[in-house]
Amino acid sequence: MGLFAVLLYSLRQPRKQNECLLVAILPLVLMAALLLMLAVEGIICMLMAAPIALALAAMGGYMGYAIQSARWGRRNSTIMLSVTLMLTPSIYGMERSVPLQTETFEVKSAIEVNASPERVWKQVVAFSEIPAPTELIFRAGIAYPIRAEIHGSGPGAVRYCMFSTGPFVEPIEVWQEPRLLRFRVTENPAPMYELSPYSHIEPPHLHGYFVSHQGQFLLTPLPGGRTRLEGTTWYSNALWPQAYWSHWSGYIIHTIHMRVLQHIKTEVETEARSQ
Image 1 (tube, rainbow, N blue to C red):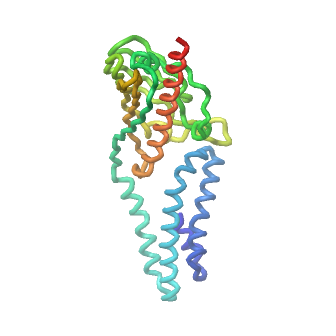
Image 2: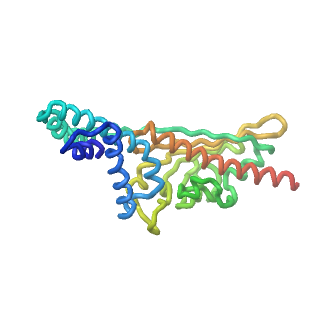
Image 3: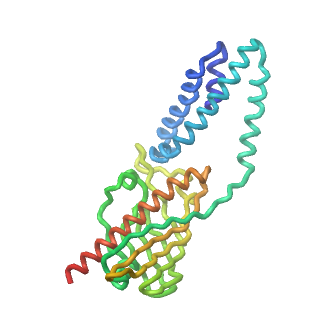
């Protein structure tokens, strides 16, 4: 978009570099407004993707500037413009033909609780309802944990971690009370509610692109009757480029972890003080 915007802009006369870069970014703004108006995308996802889009648009704008400079420098030479127009469709084809290899990422978060592992374990297995979030990312629509409940006990039991968008279904694989709780994730709710002028939209990337596969809680006894509580999530995402999106997803999962861990710490320590 940035490239073709600059080529069209410089069709009648040569343009300066700053003008070309500005013109390259303008179509992105118009496209974002169109996607929002047509209920195709939400505000938060577009803001998260903006750094990539702006960088690519600037790159295209600079390429367009170089092409138009060469064209006007040689007056009637259109070789570079023709080559660019012919190569662009082939680049789209290459992008579609290369399969995306999804990588599994790991996020760990920990907190210290002033209580024994036995006390902490009860809240880990099924924690009570967490107060409404104050974090900006959750208030903007990112899914957040509300409570956890469990059906059964030991390996084979099913834990349900209720989020604002629905439940994570978590069959228990390892039950080593009061040290380790490990589970698979067989159902994932949508990762967020899109912030949009419309009441509800369903962009394709809300389903199947971000997937949690496994999680665990590890309780380590510390001196003085304290406990180190560590939560781990293994997940994958199919959003390109993964190196960029993994920073966002890692930050969000860590924030989710800390919301749960801090709640468990508060509940356990409050209960311990009251006894």
